[in-house]
Image (tube, rainbow, N blue to C red; front, top):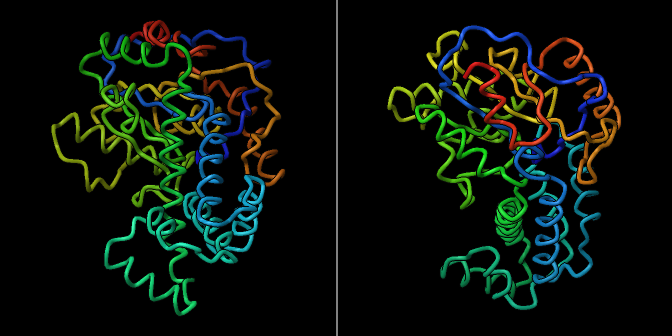
Length: 336
């Protein structure tokens, strides 16, 4: 989802496409290999469920004893519907947690100080607030601390739940294409650079919540423009901390780019429009299913499924695989 593509819809329409690759062009060196993360390298539902459980436990430890995953999701939906502007999933989750803390008074400031990562000065001020009954000002800081708990567990759960052979497949790709730049392009907050098994295999991560991207996450072109900019700067040995994105035909890495992902809309169709060759990771899942952690409306789900079917019938898939371990051979089939 996060996401996220946190609202990581299946929308695979796997019964329509028979698999295989389209006729390949003349061999080109693989310069850039980008990956979606959620439901491409790990199962999103299990990972988010673990992170949500950690968040609920954290809420209960600071006094929100009635907190449940369902209550967090309900608050997120309410915030999403009420906001006049688009909010990131991270911001909505923090606001949801803060609202759950509204009726909770810290019995001991130490529990809130630990979660909120208070400085010594903060703790002194907080004690004064509590004594005066004006502890509401602490909620934002504690909510951000609890979100950090959620994010840390998200990465830990993703590390523990990597699809079989995922790290080995990436290492194989790295060994086969040592000059290739490898990046992650995700709408959510997962970051392989925060995961021991993957951190050395990725050169960069672009999130749909990054300031230079938001609110233009996948399937919008902007997130891929930023990824291409970072890849080009890495290719040239430059610092990419202030990348601004640009048109795809300006990149040297552009003609040797493959994007891998599970979503026909966010990954296949969107990257194809930017000039990538596409590898669709089809897990043979229920194309009409919406994940339990999704806060999207049924109308949005239906629109995405229709768009997925259109992408599939439109020949946007260059190579279909059913397991991430098939990726090294798929790249060979694509003449890389």
